[in-house]
Every structure is written in C-alpha cells, then in structure tokens.
Image 1 (cartoon, helix red, strand yellow):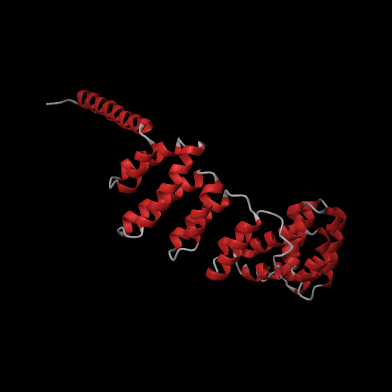
Image 2 (cartoon, rainbow, N blue to C red):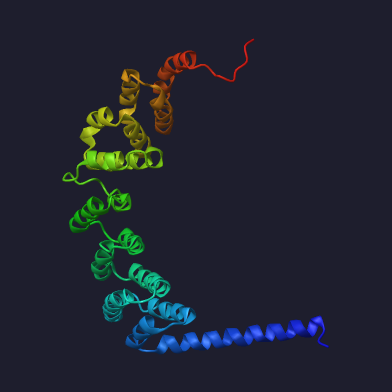
Length: 281
C-alpha cells in the first residue's frame, strides 16, 4: 500500500511532467507560422488549445506584418462564428475581442465598428472595450454618437467623455442621456468635459446643471469659481439637494472663506429640517 509520502512524491512528479508537456506545446506554437495559428484559432474545439493559440498570437502583436495577417483572420473568423453554436461563438468572440484590444487601433477599429453595430449586446460590449484604447478622432466620436442614437446604450457616450467636449456635441443631449444614472457622476463628467473645452461657459453651465457644475469644479480644482458656487446655492429655490455637493466642492478647492459663508445657510436648513431621531430634552 502506498503511504502518504510516496503518494505526494508521485503527485509532484506528475505535476512536473504535466508542466513540461504544457511548456513543450506552447513552445511548438510559438514557432508555428502566424497563418497556421490563425487557422487553428478559428477551427479548434479545445478551449485549452484556443487559449494557447491566443497567447502565441498576442506575442506577435506589435509587428505590422503579423498584425496584418491576424486582423484579416479575425474578420474571417468573426463572420464564420455567426454560424457556430452559441457557446462556441461566445468563446471565439472572447478570443477575437482579446486580440482586437491588443492590436494597433488603426487596424482593429474597422472590425470594432462592425461589432459595435452588431445585433448582440455581447459583441457591442467587446467593441466598446476596443474603443477605450483608441484615440478619440472626429470620425470615432461621430460613430459613437450614432451608435448611442441607435441603441440608447450610454456606454458609447461614456467613451466621448475621456476628452474635452467638442463644440459640435450638444451637452444638453448628454446630460439628458445620463439622467438618473450613477448618482449624477456621469453628468458631472459631462460638465467637466464641457468646461475643459469651453472655460467661458461656467455661468451658463452653473445655471443649467448646478449639481453637475459644482462637482466638475471640485474635480477640476477651479478655485476661480468658488464664489459662483456660493451664489448659485444661495439663489437656489431648493437648496437641500445642492448643499452637500457644494460643501464638498468648496472643500476640494480649499475655499475656507466660502465654506464659512455657508454656515448660516446650513444652520437654517437644520432648523427647517430637524433631526427626526433627536430626542426632546
């Protein structure tokens, strides 16, 4: 009968041999022609081999000659995957998406645009991941706006907010798109992108969307607008939804004088909205 020590030795030996075999298989694929790897990418039924093929192809990303071969194969595999069983199509799409994200944006974007127009949400989500790594050109911005109009998927709009907001984009449309989403965070990002592009719209933006404006001013550290926050809060008919973000923004700006100006206002709010859990003396 095998004792525990001998069983452990046998297991460790099996582990070493298995690891060596995996290394040999990977080494073989590393020296295979790119065309052959691409062929196996679209034909293998073994998820482990598929993973190894993807890894081997990823090692060739960065070489223009190899990238051209890979992206041609991805277009073909993308079309062929439409005819596969759901589970296999999902596996191929994940592998294709992983390679697309690694390739140079200029050659992966055309396929990503196809996927962004696809009927399945899964491919659209994978396309969005590719766009996150791509420079935000005028053509891509227009494409993302068109995709939002067609799908009402705000993930397309979020990509636009990485850069200052182009003057051709209606910020009001973006504010409306993000109404009620993530506690106003993305509306603050709209305000931030708009302010970066057009610093002179501060008063107009503050009047339109004070909550988003306060947040953006705090995020951007725009000390020059501290007094505008106090004025806007003082004029607001309903101060309760704004007072917290106003104090936060002024704190981020280090605007001590403006924070002190708000103390009487906060005290008044305390009187009109007493603590419901406070016991009477």
